Image (cartoon, rainbow, N blue to C red):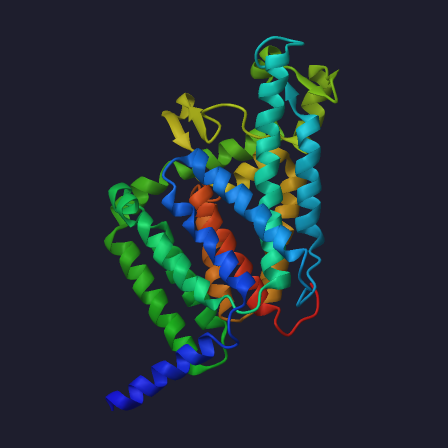
Length: 352
């Protein structure tokens, strides 16, 4: 019996690592080492430079599959335009220091978007067998457990429950359906047993989401009167800025507390944004939110009912309920897993 189990496990490992990972696959796995940098600035520098290294290596390679996701690439172009559209007077008008602050923060935001796109494109087009990176990413994610336990965060666990349950229920096999039903019951039981804590953690989120949504559509005129916008160095009157605000958003984070919001009228002081997707739309406007949504939907269409749906859907759920992609370490791991999910689902497809 034990010998049969051993043979089964060895066969599973052999299939997991077949074909043999390439040098490029091993190089990409190095991105998980972002977690060993404790300073967020060092994490960001490592992520950006390592992502560029990955892209440069692909210039010497022949693509294994085509990947033309117009929504993702258009999102990169829109992010670049935002660098020139959002120019606020932060310090002193016509001041060199002001221009440096504004352009550096704006360019930094665009750089994260650009390198994220390069990572997705490189993995999907040039990856051979990156299944082992799932294990590396999982081990790396375990380093966040102490902080998650301290904060009582249950979002990742519930996201995995929901994702596996959805995948199981979508299958046509009875065993998979049974797994989906079983995990649905387990997830519901965990939620019921921790309902008081979950309600407490969730209580602020609807207010934060409503704030991000409304702020994306309506210009804060009191802030604008102190910080007027210049598009390509041309001053934009408030009357026009109010009408076009929903198109361009607020621009990339230019303040220390850019990842937080304050709503004293709702009884909240400083709260994390707790929603990566709405935050991105808040920064870059409704068009960016639409492009990001269609990128997610097109990726889910490519993945379909394949097992990769579990990982990709879990990431989407996590990004909707908390801040993840705006942290270099967590964002890098999510990019890795999400990109590999898309790649594995495209093995028999030529193009998306």
